[in-house]
Image (cartoon, rainbow, N blue to C red):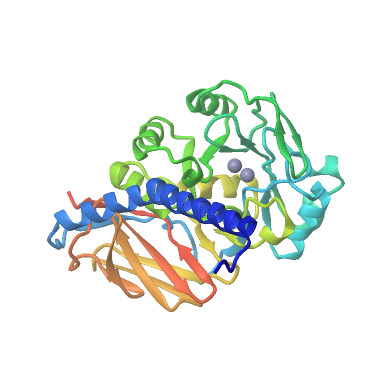
Length: 360
Ligand SMILES: [Zn+2]
Ligand SMILES: [Zn+2]
């Protein structure tokens, strides 16, 4: 007996095929990286040693005096393919309690805000000059007006026409020549191998980091981050970022950075971005870090925070310890760096990586 009419059967078959293709393609792009990590872990045992020292990216942070400023550094408006006007987007972040915002329209520098009817000083906000350069691997460019115009962007719809034929190296050189800072956006969306990133990070000091969490897509790219860190640390840290990539209001608040700063200024923000003295979160009510203490003599790093249920310490891509404090002189499998992830009901908060060296 035929329960389903044939049209419905055809539709169901197409759906099933689409699902299989989706699952297989996901396995091919994400699964490969995951397998490499676990293979790497199984082979190596590193004995604990009491002469390890940590490079602390938070060493200049005064956790008790500095205010913590919430920042979104990847945002779209109608100046590219966002749904909302510049003023609507600024007002929404202001209402949500953000103090730092970079509008990063595709191949457009939406700055200064005064041109769009908003004064950051009146709002108590820091307006970061930004651009998502979108011709090759998408790259966030900050503190400069470098741009390559080739396509036109329509709100919501996206780019019309061809992107310029330029390499990541050329784009990054352009940002450097204009005294800007650069961050690779949503690496998981592009699927490049870790060697691609490692080679550029090791050559270019102004290429400061990688967007580890993206609220829109949504992505948590800690696997590729760990692979790159394992290749480069402790010599070359790559700072992690988390951003909404807001196109529509419901993306707001999904992923953000928190900067403890002595004052809200462009100079302090830029310096914190370069030194990695900030943390980042995925999930609107993710855990908050109140302080991080590093004691290299005692061999302890400890986190004090709110809203977490578990803290995992990660080194070279694998969990080496669980708990708010890590006794790194008596813990096995500590490689080139350590970093922590605080997990709670409201999301995940990531610290930056601490480089591990042997005391000379
Ligand atoms: Zn993008
Ligand atoms: Zn974007």
